[in-house]
Image 1: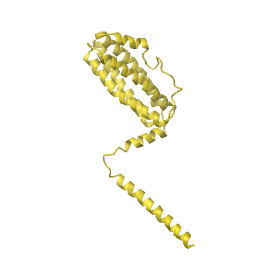
Image 2: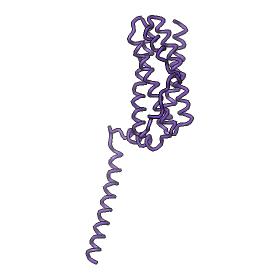
Image 3: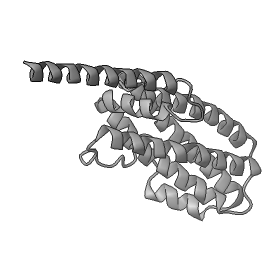
Length: 199
């Protein structure tokens, strides 16, 4: 009996100390500064709440954004391009590269199998190989014009994809990115149409 009583007392004491330690950690963590706690909670939310629409959105938007960056790189490598077009191409590249990284991170967090999703081909505003070659070969004002025309179509496809995510996605972070893409690219389409009209 003494042995059992002592064991019970030891277990109880251990539990109390453990709870006290947890409580202490909770109290002190609220005082911590300079640490990124948001990334962990965001990752946990991403893992917990991803449906098929979220996975499709992330997978397809990576491919879509990648082509937009290729188009931007093509125009940025040329001379004699309208300065407004050069600036816009740089902005598109700077905005979409980090989004690709975020989408790739989510797919990894979700443990998504994207092997059966296939390629987007020419849907969702994607440019064909012929389109990309035409942009590569164009020069001067014609290159500026072609880039704008192609990117407007490309952006419209992205907006449709983002709208589908907003309507059908379940992950709050992915839905928020879908809304951001819609807002950003709607504004960029307006800017591109204005530049196009003045060339």
